[in-house]
Image 1: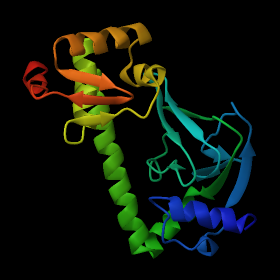
Image 2 (image 1 turned 90 degrees about the vertical axis):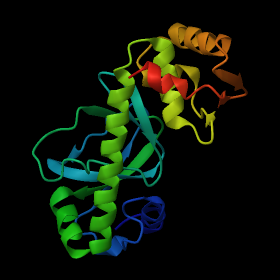
Image 3 (image 1 turned 30 degrees about the vertical axis):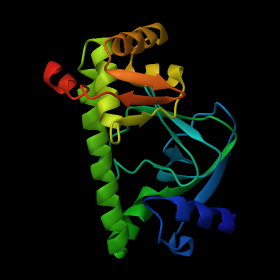
Image 4 (image 1 turned 90 degrees about the horizontal axis):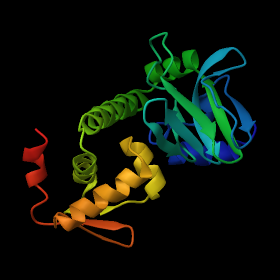
Length: 215
């Protein structure tokens, strides 16, 4: 297919397609999108799995705003391969982007022919299920400060969280306003539960007590 070098790079970067030879894929086609364009699973009347070849796509939920950003190797359209239902998300191009589309029937054939791909597919679906469970748990916490603390607790590694997103993006992920987010950070710092410095949040020794408060 056209752009074989860029496709090979995207496959190599993909958690799902790493290890798959692009030459084995039948009927794939590449489409380009401008910034702001909607990127749907259905292209040319065909339901497809998409793989980002270049650029970046933003995944949005009508309920909680921006969910994630996909870059080269990111995949979408994989969770409804075997059911005739649309995903409740909207994908748009953040910048000029290109996407490889693989018909879902072809993807299903590849799954049956490649046990390694099938294993990675099941593992990736499991990770997405856990992510959704964490999101539901997060959004079920009514208090903004406790919701932020719950997010930090889920994201921490050895008591440290590297935010990696802007405060506006974090507020959208938490489903709260920017001003509420800043008040929540201030309240948690005032309580001594966290320390914030240069995009890093340290959960202080008593952060685990939060788990008891949100039960």
